[in-house]
Image (cartoon, rainbow, N blue to C red; front, side, top):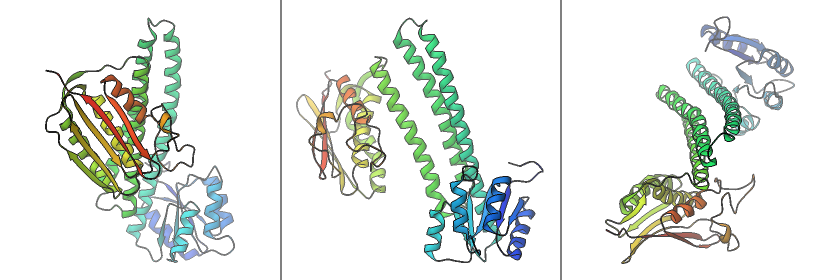
Length: 392
């Protein structure tokens, strides 16, 4: 994306040596970047506030105010805190690198550097910054649309024949408005990752994975909130059919096996079921298995996650056991309550929104199935769901 004047972006070079500035400036200008310069920390902060560069190349070692102090002050100022800072330094000690990142820098490059590497690093961070700004704009538009939709629906409520019909419409609109920009973010991240595949730095790969994982997590949360609302408004439509839960359990377990492996957990699948038919809704039963497996993996730091399934003359039992953090006896009575979590607050150690098990309980009730739990704090948990066999 070009800026006025035909330049790609504006880069601020901060270095106390004129020859270093000249070398960097020449490389950047040849590649159509507009260059601003500062030869000390105080000047750098002043120029950053007035020029608003798209990226700052900052030398760590400068007399007076060094690069670390400059970066810290830039990140404390609201007008400059979003500008990516890349340290350019001759130092390679790990403590200098760690100190640089702790002040808010996004990257570093050591002298002498290769021009191609420098330009690739700059391009990468400018791209990430652009995506972040686009996401912020998308979020702002989304918030505005949500407000507009809410006002529209509040007006429509007075004319609606039933509250259930109105709430269903509301959920549909909100789902669309949230999913559309999030899918755009995932697509953009995937495209950039693909385009940079041959030149991508190893340290950037986790960034792309984190971006996609976080977006999928938002979508998953939205789905759970919508399902909860549909259930409470009696708008959830069950489409029951003859369903083989043995096959469904196997498919779901294979899906979560890789997630367990990523955490270094043993994933054990012990099923004696061959064909196990119930009268059930495919989506709802899948959600039961997914919520139980997701919780088991999420709340287990080491050890195992185990899936078992057995049958009697009239029933099928599916169990998911883990060696995770376990549940205290006092909390068991609140376990299936919406938004209920034993570990709460901003300092909680595990992700989650307290909806998974509450929805699982509801899905079980819809299928006349029972769910029970056995757990000991810091030792692990075991959830068992019992389904009635399909009657021919």
